[in-house]
Image (tube, rainbow, N blue to C red; front, side):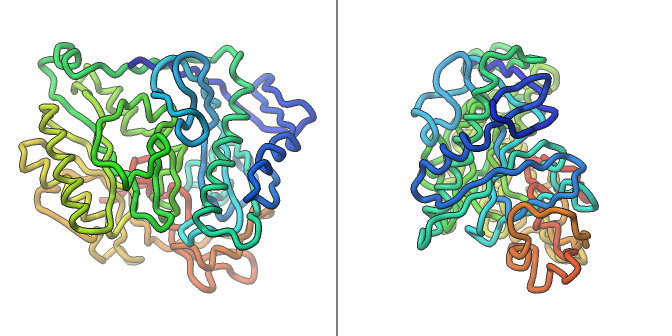
Length: 426
């Protein structure tokens, strides 16, 4: 399976009568985009705004972040099973709008939603402060259930990203990157003397608005399975969850997974990157045992020497993480786990809810409980009052002068467990 990504830089976004991309500027007809969003009868009102790097803008509460991409050659289309037909993606050519995203915002769905500051002290805690963000603000119809509202906002964001990306279909990319995923037999022959390494990605799937979708299927309904890394770059995995903003994997994260990128970079040099296993994070012990058993068996079946495991979320999923780690180690497969920490505001509490001496190679993305103060910004996109109730905030987080005291848990991507951030700890 071979995928070519063609990157087209977006240096600014402006509203205009005509939708087009010219000289690195994305021009958009807001009315036409809104018309498509309002085709969903569950959405009462919609509007768009723009947030650029360095502007005095705070976006809250953030639900998802999506990078516009369009399939220009090969089977399928982006976000199969949700926003397009159920075809196998991950091959052919896809154009990527680099330097921008679609951010979905609206009245709160679940209390674990986030903040993006485009400038000031809070800017460094979210990687999305560095992007030109097209922000979609939606209001649901009255009496819509939380799950229906989440789905409506999720689909509206995906469709908007696809509509925007369609403008890049005929453009010539500024650069092209190629990624290839071989079958097991050919990968063994390619680099027989290098250690065989795979990536195990744990997907948030605890329900109650803690969901991730694979080809449109809720991940809680799957058992561990193989997937090509290139499929994730084509939108096979989509976020649908409201876990804490700091370590949530947005759809943008899945499309730009840095663990996959680093393993591809090391492929053929220090390791033989043979593939990727996706598994879920469950609520009940029996389900955790089942999934971790199958993860270990599948990795043993591949004859692996090493595995990198990434987690999503904290607390209950820490048990899934440690189970996966220990069972792989018991099979003689060396593991490295990527997590973040909830070590209390003073950093002195136990970092994870579970542990094992076999988890002796750990990468941390930082302590989500670290308390910060951020000043008022000139413009709010969304509703800043929700800071008082989202995870990491508290009653009184939003002060009378517009400043905020909260844990960095409130920032979208602050301690992301793919390492898609600027933080760590020792």
